[in-house]
Amino acid sequence: MKIALRYIIPSFIGFSLMTLIPLVISFLLVFTNWDGAFLAQIKVTGLKNVSYILTKDWLFWKSMLHNFIFTFGVVPVEIILAIILAVLLNDAAYFKKTLRVVYFIPYITLITAVTVVWMMFFQPSWGPINSFLRAIGIQNPPGWLTSPKTSLLSVMIVSIWRSLGYYMVIFLAGLQTIPSELYEAAEIDGAGRVKQFFRITLPMLTPIILFASVTGIIFSFRVFTYINVMTKGRPGTSSYVMVYYLYQVAFKDFRFGYASALAWLLFIVIFLVTIVQWRLQKKWVYEL
Amino acid sequence: MVTHTGFKIRRIVITVILMFLGITMLLPLIWMISSSFKIEGFIFSYPIQWIPNKTTFTFQNWIDLFNVKNYSVPRFYLNSIILAAGTIIGRFFFGSLAAFGFSRYNFPGRDKLFLLYLATIMIPFEVLIIPQYILLRHLKLIDTLLSIILLGSFDAYSVFLLRQYFLSIPRSLQDAAVIDGAKPFVIYSQIIIPLARPAFASLGIITLVGVWNDYMKSLIFLNSPKNFPIVIGVLVFHQHYNLRFGPIMAAATISVFPLLIIFLIFQKEFVKGFMTVGIKG
Image (tube, rainbow over all chains, first blue to last red):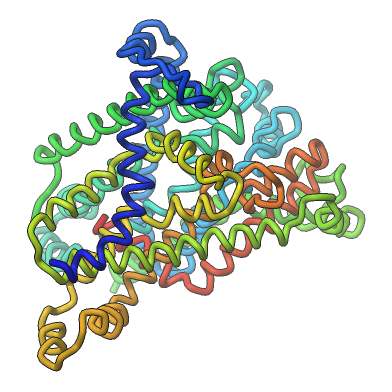
């Protein structure tokens, strides 16, 4: 006992200071109107923050809606594309390893640097994307980041581009764990490639699909960097998301109490979505 | 024989398609490099000139990049390296000690304590950031690299990852050493640590990539340019040059490449690292 604790205590002290105590303080701040300046000015306001957010704060609801749009746009597309790529790559004749590296590269690039490059790519009047679209005869190409209709979509495209390779590599690893006897047996039974994919490959990949969707959804609800660099929530509030809003409230307005309430609501949403996924897994995740 | 050839052709077609798609994925990066060597007026010319020729080529963007007052690329890099190295060392040290205690010894309340660690993995860092900010402000650590290193060093996930790996190391090795009279620290440093090298490699790689890209923490905890890591530094150039895109592309290129080169050298370890985290996580 003594020996074990001697090894755990250094970590536990840091863990308490950096995680446990902040967690408790953060929860307490939800019920105050503290602006971060003097502790003496702190006022307990009870559930006022939470009730204001839920009933009067339209920007909270809008940001939350954008997070849901972002999540349901990005995660399924990413997973489907990653599975297709992984299955194809598994079948490729040459350069397998090189191709795996090529697709993984975007994930290794510095997030802010490539975000800046994409901003130039999206530039509506002389950026390469719209130049290309005009060249193939599209008269009025979209305004991408500058238009309220497409700002969120543009951010989603960059997000998919950067993390697709990561998910592909995970699915590729999953494909290696499928016993080849299954395919051999299916071949003897005369099952075609498509049937093999839907009856063997896809069911065997379901545990990884679950993992990818859980992590992908958590990431999507916490998206911040792309937004803060590319749009700052603009034009208007068309690309406001929760963490961007929270960051504004906490570190531009220094309304620590209100921001804590926003953070906990975000956490509750992420938590509920994850729980739902766990509960639903019995229905579709294949277990060995 | 016919089906065999058909099979081969299909695989070659797939390879070609994948190569085409792969190059498409890399177009933004290729465009970035190419633009960094172009005279301003030619960057956005269409059709895109992928390789600059005599009239469009210039080194000026790169020369300008290293001549900006107050902002220095080497400094940004040094800061990023300090942040990554500090966090990796902290996680290795504190994480492995705790993981050793959790995995090799039995004591009352052990599993409850470990569960406390596990429970916090789910909590998004946005929930903690305000109290963390207040705490570090009291410690006078705002605008120091140490603040971010401290925040990263005690994460529960490292303890979890290392503990899982330590558990897979056979107990018999430890028992044999105990019979030979080995002290716990000898078991920790001579048996467990050397055998857990793959786990440390994975943890090191995901920490490196994570810290390298940690934009939000740098934004909140660091204010002065001399402390900026490259993840913020590249945006400083973006603002500084405003509408001169050549130097911005040079800045983006130089900030993307080092980690990319490390990745290309250690690609096996990188892919393995992310896969173990992915599948076990």
